[in-house]
Image 1 (tube, rainbow, N blue to C red):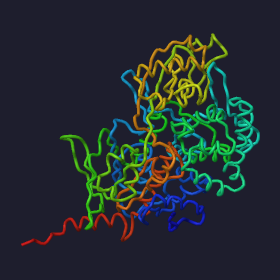
Image 2 (tube, rainbow, N blue to C red):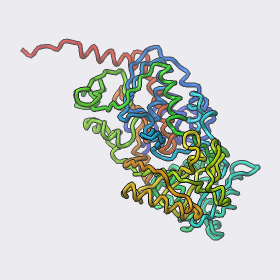
Image 3 (tube, one colour):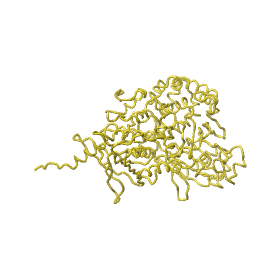
Amino acid sequence: SINRSININSSISSSATILASTATSSSETFKSDGAKTQVGNDSFLNENLMARAQNGPGKVNKEKLKIGIVGAGLAGMVAAMDLADAGHDVEMFELRPYVGGKVSSWKDKEGNHIEMGLHVFFGCYYNLFGIMKRTGSFDENLRLKEHIHTFVNEGGKLGALDFQFPIGAPVSGLQAFFKTEQLEPIDKFHNALRLGTSPIVRALFDFDGGMDMVRDLDDITFTEWFTQLGGSRGSIERMWDPIAYALGFIDCDHISARCMLTIFMLFAIRTEASVLRMLDGSPQTGLHDPIIKYLEDRNVKINLSTPCKELIHTLDENGMPSRVTAIKLGVGQSEQIKQFDAVVCALDVPGIKKVLPETFRQYPIFDRIYNLDTVPIATVQVRFDGWVTEMNDPLGMMDTSGDLSDGKAPGIDNLLYSADAEFSCFADLAITSPGEYYKEGEGSLIQAVFDERAFSRSQDQLVEDCVKQINSLFPSSKKCKPIWSSVTKLGQALYREKTGQDKYRPTQATPIENFFLAGSYTYQDYLDSMEGATRSGLMVADEIIARADGPNGLKQMSANAQDTTNTPQPSMA
């Protein structure tokens, strides 16, 4: 049964109490008003979320905490921004030699920028856009794309969801589905029939009712939901599967209906939600470097190549973990122990499973994490000597002379989907994100993300398959020769958005008084994504800030724990 004891502000829909299914005690629920605004139906329509992320926490605590954050991905860095602005002493520890987590990028020995995946910014990334405005990177580092979602089919045939229309949502979305060339007429009919009976339609006049319906669909697949009342297999195979692979790297037969309908609910309600942006260059330069500068300007120390070896903690009289006292860091002779008033683990699913001590699993909130599964991906980058997505100008396709920077090169300047390839989504980064990806005298830089269907193949085989499938989608591209390639495998990437997973996602505050969680897998009302990571970082910061001061605050708890440690114990003579 759903615990209805969570105290949610009256402005937040009562349906936010769905999160109580992830909690077993009041210590696992939200205390801060800021975190509460990130859950519930209103969080999808709250235009103030961007301003909150842009302006910061709006509070400086009276007490200054010493806070350790394990993990320097997007969630950890966002949390550090708010905690530093609230007056705390923050230090971060990252296993890798670079920040960013699943949004990482780095340079190889030849100076090529390598990415962990293909990163696209949807228009409903309100929190992330607020962070980027706060660091001064939004206007300068993001490139707006045409309001079209393009499908590339075998033989070069294009289909699209073209949202460009004088009237915004929901009309722009309805006409996009009605006019799309991606579906045959019979599949369009069945598609319209199913969408017409979906929570999306109800949400147009009763958003809370529509969202409540969506939340109840976490235990069935999108295919099961779609085919129940008229949806066709053709629609799934030609349009919905490519979208599902792009969102969660699994197909409609396995992805949760809640996951798919959450994003399309936003598309239906908000015109800007389906607008796409991409970075003008790499994530490190366009997204992370401005955040790093923001943190360093506030004396946040980021320790790279510094693994967390152990969370040192105390047990209560019942043998239950009660407090994290320190973090054991480093490797071999470089190991060190650092004490903190509060500790945040801002990790991905495999990371948190490795770091959590076995004793923590006595608490259901931690034990449930081990039910979360992950999906593997392989990101393939291939540089060509021509412009592979240019299908109308054979001469232009092979012309790499002159200055073709800043998106002036021929080809398609947008994210691309395909139902006829093993990569869920792809793009020509030399056109879409030219900042560091365009190279004078060279051509396309195709970046394609392969899912588990192809993950086990060798790197050479993946590159060969990528080129072959690109040639199948763009037949004229056979004239272009690959001149460089890179493959990055991530064996455990996003958590698997299969059915029944939502109930296992932990809240940011935990039963251990000074131990907190962040990461896109933690409970927030969005998907495992950059926006989800940003939301979790803001939420965990709000939870710490709300608990910092007062006689029962984190600082006083730390002092009390220190006094107990220093109190001489009676002898057993």
